[in-house]
Length: 358
Image (cartoon, rainbow, N blue to C red):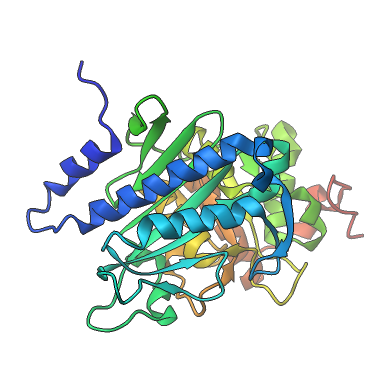
């Protein structure tokens, strides 16, 4: 049997479908992959390098910034800005966009990325990753932040790298989802997980249960039903997961199914959600949909959300299609008043998350 293709060969094969393509798109994705290799090496060294220690800094989101966050951000900028494929980049670690210098050739694409998702897990050696989204740039003018404010349906590629026991690059260019494993001996990403597909049903869900007192009733309803197990309305047992790394959560779902929730809550009423739309929610939603899953805010398809700002946050519910659709239906029933979950004995009982409403 022929050996599985490298990322480079896979992209060359896909490019043949478009005889008039310039090669810029492939070049950009290979630049992103090169940055991910550098980041994987930096993450793997962990405490062996002094830069792995926490620095007394915060990023533009007001969140504590690990030194590796900055290193990952610089690796992506350095790897991609000189390739001639990009007009500008946007990152979680930068307040404004980074335009390609006027001294360099400007390309047709925009790159939005989270350089090191889950970096709070670095010190405990849990998987972290890089998330990225590729959009088309407006032609004939200098790029601005407004150019990035495109709904997720207009992404031309999306993916993530996960740095765990094996480093992987998971990618979609709009024709399914492919997983590539980094082979250190050759320095190549090798296609090991072709045509990833999420099963429509699931027995696992991931949510941060410490926020349960802030959840909206539709989310409470879904979680309580899952926790009720075989004796509850679902008639089945569910496992609950939480890694605090979106890359790791989504990777598990792509491999074996499940649902991930970071829903709207009342913990901070100034924020519509926790996760950033452009460089976290949208790329993951594209991957999940391309793998036959679904992605929603609870009230709207994620990829249909029209961004209004560079670092906009949204609620995120994604994974196995039937579970996501159930949660969206619960939101619809609650908003319309058709759902009266607290009238049910299940919801009057004391549960793990909240006291009786009586």
